[in-house]
Image (tube, rainbow, N blue to C red):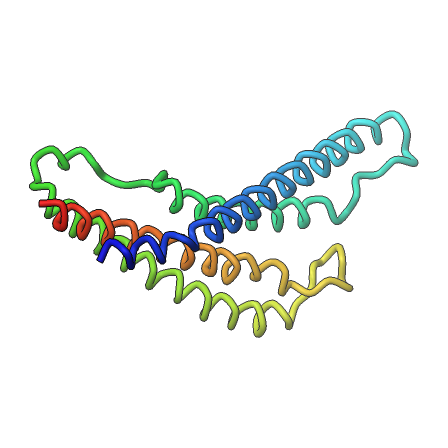
Length: 178
């Protein structure tokens, strides 16, 4: 059985690359968010002194859209690091095998959530999102406001598969070594 896990472990670099790409995208989104917000605040301040300078009308909607992407993508990244919110106060009172089973059950539920996010999120992006546009940018579809949900669902799915695999691997390898 250990040979099987060695073969599957060969795709770990794919998970690493996925994580790094998602992290890089989140960093770019944060930089863009900070720059747009800074320009917007500066323009609001400067418009008091020079009436020719105006706050870009599109800045608020773009910042909110970028924040939506960052929120859901960073939540998917937290799954890989095991940094998502969880209750561990009672873990010392439960047997290790029960904790491992509960971790796997939790991962299965989050995996199911990721599938819902992919299916329903894409449906919303294509239906509700495609029917509207941004108020300050009528040429841009609201599809982009709903699109982070299925994108994050895909990332969550990938990272949850890795988590479930790691849990099963830790159980099987321990049992083989006994």
